[in-house]
Length: 396
Image (tube, rainbow, N blue to C red; front, top):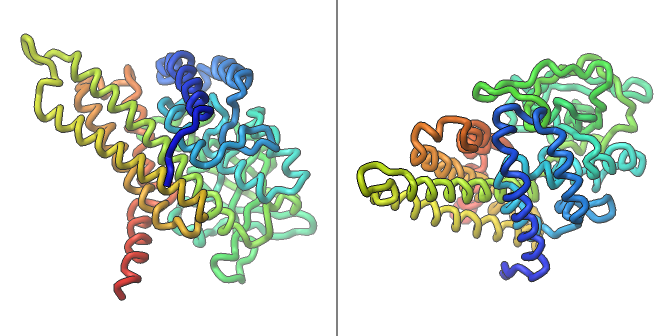
């Protein structure tokens, strides 16, 4: 395995890093105080600059307007641009749009690409992903009550979803619903494109996450589908392939999630170190003089380094031997890296003291929003169970 970064890639990463530091991170305070709607205009201006620099949509294929980077390269991009919650949006690769673009590119018809994919990649619209249901386990996507029933040339959809991420302000949802209830469990559901202005698509609320419901991107909505009628031509991929499409969405997506976790961890460690050397605790003493703080810094640095190597290894596996042969490595990083991130954020808050609890720094935002990293895309326990089953196969 060779993780060497080419000169061209390093130049790109340096440009992105400089832009994030100078142009994007200074917007964080306004974002924390006013939410996304308070900086919409400024974000749009930054996006235009990124497009002028030809650094727009690094994850996405060239044939639809992206940079077409390989997985290893895009992983390194996330390590740079995800150090702020605004970075992915500014560079056109935020979730859930990124995952939706991936499956639209592979499975959408030419008409669907023209109507939904191209404007999504261009940043003209946003999308959401509607799978998780209120009363059923999100970790088991074959358990689903939302139904899409054929009626002539249409599907009529009824169901109750929540944590439909990014629904507020989205142009369309990619919905997962049961279309073939008599089929075997993994072939019952399909993915269907649902424009959010369709009658019967009802955004009930943005779910409050640890006291914050927010507006616009980064929110998680509760949706009621009530006799929501869409054309059958909005089916994405073959009927009954919803589970397969969902799995396709997860492999590379977890690499990007985990490199985002690395980016957050590295910046939180940087903030911890700066605070430790500046914060006086007694005449002639600062926090950094305490052995326990030094121990925390050393542990966090080693954990981040180990986590990054694990993610790069998983990315190399996906790129060279495919998702199917990298399932164990993908599962490793999902729970390991999320826990490293939460540990580093917690230690950084502790070192900042009362300041760490406020929105005067980005730490409290991460603490609220990134706790979900141990739940979304499957909880830690599900991934650990999958890994242990693979390991124990050799002993049974």
